[in-house]
Length: 238
Image (tube, rainbow, N blue to C red; front, side):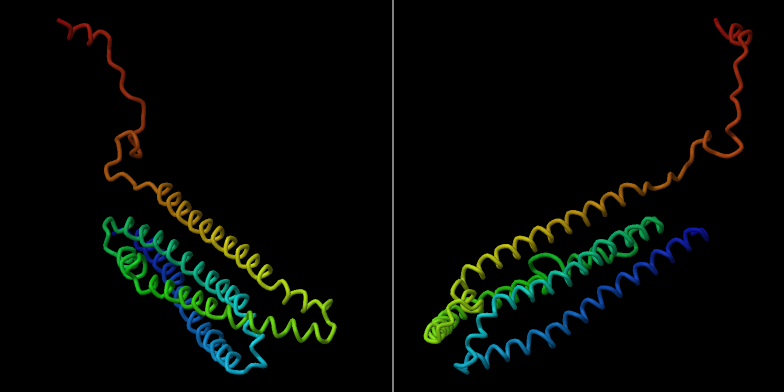
């Protein structure tokens, strides 16, 4: 291994360490999100269900769920960046080494990607629990909504902005859910396509150097070729 190759491998590996630290920091933020936001939210939701005066706050569950999806989408984008860029760096290091000595990409795909991985299962379970909680909250929201509308009608407050929102609650909620979910899906697909295209473009732009250079490409041997003497050529003819 030449000194130039050692410097290149060391530079690429330092960059890979930086990308790996970004993935570790994303893991830390995921656990913070679970401990700071998700657990207190579930406690507050349980308190609202057992307290009749606070059941109207259950109506915020779909919007808080969308906010949680936005946070998860941002953190997942960090994973997408770290995975795609890390794959490129590992491929470049293996290319400099001349062999696939570092198998990080294969192990990463085996452990963290695919339907069998714990990460994918956690995503599916998380989204399933979120949808399940929203479905269970529908009758509670309807009863709290009817109680609020009856109370506001008795107090002649039909024209207040809160009364209008509660009166058209499901229309507003469904429109928000559809618009935001579609935006998230389009954004996720676009990011995935761009990272795959960028990774493929970078890999194809780095051509491996040839092991045996042609004589014409060697320095000091690119001078003019010797022309054949026509008299010698005529003598060699039968």
